Image (cartoon, rainbow, N blue to C red; front, side):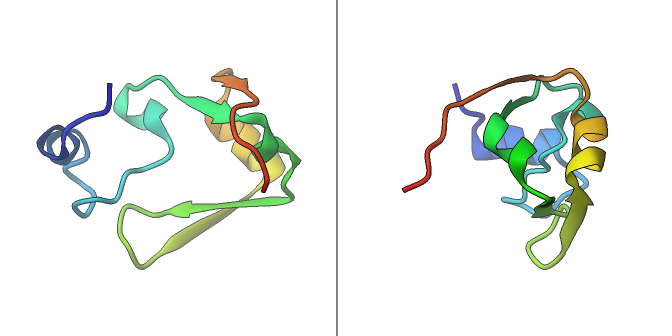
Length: 77
């Protein structure tokens, strides 16, 4: 199930409340990503707050997520 707000605050204590970092491996979490991300030239994600973004190339994103599980579970409308 999804983490409660209190659990997220405890787990991501170095982030602003409500800002969930996309790189779960840094927090010992399993990561699952959608394969559509791998087709994007650049990927943007929150930097632990609600003001800053981090931009990475597709190649760097692949290095960051490593061997994480992935699949096709989103769709473009």
